[in-house]
Length: 289
View (cartoon, rainbow, N blue to C red):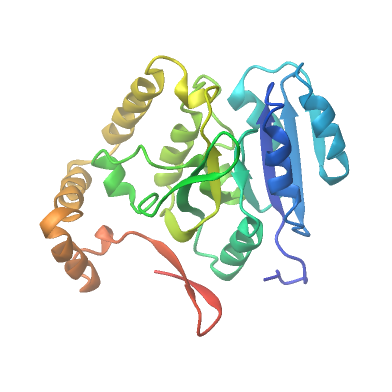
């Protein structure tokens, strides 16, 4: 799918990296190897000493920009990278994680065909340490702001999230560098205040399970930081919204789920809807619902 002037939308991808020489080749290849014609790929390396720089340099022809120099951490590197980009669609992929061969073309089609969709996620997936497929979660991403208010907020897989630059700018245009492990979650909460979160039922990205992942470090610090951010998020909503959130939790699972779905389809509880993007094979196009 192309835009009005005949070009597919520009997609800006940032990869922050530091001493991930065992994995970064596969990450870079998962982005550049798709052959997406309007890719703007930026790599921000924190001054690696393990051979990563040579690997990055080998992909230089496919990069819009790259640098290897000390930085102030993960969120700072991502902010540095996005400051170098101009694309309408944005995302980042960490230096041990990977996209699938169809990822960029798929998100370009969705954002081109559905101007009302501002951010999306796919089905969560994982790779093992060798890069082989390990697991896929069909439930990841299927929630709305009321689910988040009710406490369902831990399953947004960053590798599968893509958004419009206009939403990024509305949300402040940068990650909070004071949050070394939860800067992504903080960004998602800002997005939730502004736009519905759409789920597309295909795999778009996955994280590699290995012992040096940022989310595994910190002796439970991620959970504590996320809980604090969530509490601040909830505090910004009125009683009516919190009552709706409790209904989402009550009607969204178990024996009462069919009732919630029925009332949603009837228009009685439109806010209960979990926004989705689906592909119509007869029309060969994407639809939001």
